[in-house]
Image (cartoon, rainbow, N blue to C red):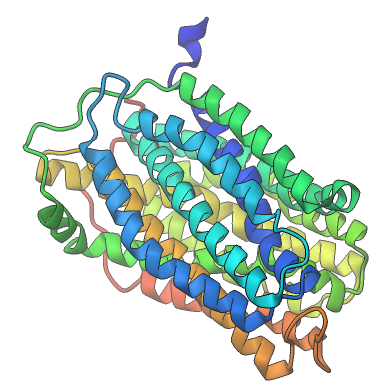
Length: 430
C-alpha cells in the first residue's frame, strides 16, 4: 500500500499545502502586523523589503545551481528540504515574535534580520520542492493533473492561512499563531518528502559549470518572457492578499471577524474553479490556456473597485477567485515544457536552476508590490495605522483594483511578445 503513495500527485501536493499555510499567512499579514499593529513606518518597511531583494538576487540562483549539482543516495532535492524544515519553522516564528518595548529603529532591525533569515530558508524550500514537479511528472497530461491537485491543496492552505488567521491571532496573538502554523508545516512537509522518490535520469551530459549554466538559462528567450510576464501577475497575487486586511477596514468598513468571510469568498471559490481550469487545459494548448488565464485574471479585479460593503466584497472576491484559479494552474504546463526543451538541448535535467531563477524573477514582484504600496500611500497620505491620512479609502481602493489591473495588462502584453513553439508535446503520463 505504501508504494501506491510514492510519487503520487496527492502526497506530493501535501508539500504545497505545508509551505503555503505559513507562507500565505506571512505575505497576507506581515505588513499589517508591522505597519498597522506595531506602528512601523511605511518607508522603513519598504526599505527592509528592498534590502532583502538584494540578498535574494544572490542566493536564489545559487541555491538552484547547488541543488542541480547535488548527488546523494537520498536524491538531489530531498536532503535540502529535510535540512530546511526546522530552520523554516524557527524563522517563521521569529518574524511574528518581536520582543516588546522596541523602538521604531529596533523594530526595523528585528524585522529586517528575521525577514532575511525567513526568506533565505524559504528559497531553499521553494527551489527544491518546485524542481521536483517537472522532474517527477513528465508529460502535459500528468503535469496538468499534478498541478491541479497541487493547486487544490494550495487553495485549502490559502483559505486556512487567510480566512482563519484573523480569528486565530485575535484569540491567541500573532506569536502563538506562528507557532501553530510552523507545526502544521513541519508535519505535512515531512509526510510529503517521505513519499518522494527521485528519478535517476538526471541527464547524460557533463553538468554545466556555474557561468555556463547561468548563460544557457539567460539566453532562453521563452523562459524570460514567460517568467517576466508571470512576475507581474504574481505581484497581483501578493498585492491583493496583503491589501485585503486594509481593504476590509478602510473600504468595506467591516470588522476583523468579517474579514474572514471576505477572504473565504475568494479561496473557497477557487477550489472547484481549479478543476474547471484543469478541464480547460485538457481542451486547448497549454500556452493559450496560460494567456487566457492572465486575461481573465485582469478582468476579475475590476469588481473590487465597486465594492462598498461585505456583500459586494464577497461577490467581487468570487470573481477574483476565477482569475486566480487559472493563474495557479496554467504556468506549470508552460514552465515544464521549457525545462524539457532545455534538457533536450543540454543533456541535463536542470529543474533546480530554472526553478530558482524563475523564483527570483517572480519573487522580485515583492519589490513592485512594496513600491506600489509606498507610492500610492504617499499620494493619499497613508503612513501607518497611527497616521492613516485623510483618505485611506482611496489608498486601498486603488491598491486592490486599479494597480492590479494595470499590472495584468502589462503581463498579458509581455506574454504575446514572442511565439512559444515547442516540439510535439508529451500528452500522456510518463
